[in-house]
Length: 444
Image 1 (cartoon, rainbow, N blue to C red):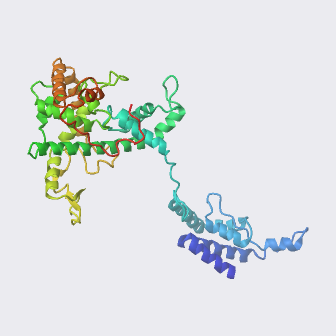
Image 2 (image 1 turned 90 degrees about the vertical axis):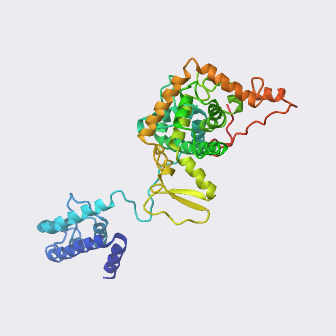
């Protein structure tokens, strides 16, 4: 009896209420079967009467083959000291209702436990990507891929961009001699797509923040609370000779270096020694430092934040507290050093083409209208760069910048040497964008 009580308590605590009552029902059926079969099982074996008789008094429990025995039935088997439970099947077959109830209980238990792990154990997580590989992907996107890729709008595009990133890393074993992807490459491609999307989102957000500071500074320098108009920016994109040349100079010298993503793309060593549409590294003369994709991105961000950045500037001039954007019917109470802005109640803080959680969703939170606008801007800039008047127009801006900063020669090193000992206008310092590249990256 003590053993029975302990077993009951164990099943109740470990398996729960449903399994306990299931076990209890089966156990009572077993007791009934044992009593009813006791007299019939007194036939002794001719080889070992005493042991045979002892075994025959123990009813054998068998669950129909259509039922998978839960832990409670295994406990009954342990109690009676045998794995053979066939005698109970005879009793249960005579009681159809009991069998159906047992089947239903087992089915319910299997459904409840589907996909679960044992109590106190965690599900196994996928193996994390190697840290060195993550850093390589991150730096490759910043240094080599951002010039051509700014936005991703579908799983198909993400897969294509991920393969492009892997090719740019130069990792061995990813691609065969004939440039086809290997089995290891396919596995890495499938495993790293989420990583690539994440790193593009992080870089995109960081670049926008750097561009925001330049845009706000432009408004402060011009004593206004609005950014350049869309029409003015489109004249630059189209390389319209009637554009505002001062604005194009700011675009070339201040704004594009931030839009380029990495400070090594369009630093003074590059932007004062070649035209913005055509100046390219010797290693890749057909791919300019500043691509049409980069200029389209710069114009898209200005359009997206045309109301937001002036609102942020105005708010920061009144309050230096950190701004946190929220949505919903209620705005949290202000805290020390924190100011909440409800985008649903004050839409001027929201982007034209983006959502508040743009850095967390799969492709950065850009709307379809934003993707279409970017494609239009990119096509327009490609056409503008191809105009016959563009070369003279850009050469004029380059000359203005070189005269402004007294640039001589064909490199900054040569210019500094030629200007040594002469008074000149200080070179503008390029602001460092945090987390845009790893410290151990060696410039190409």
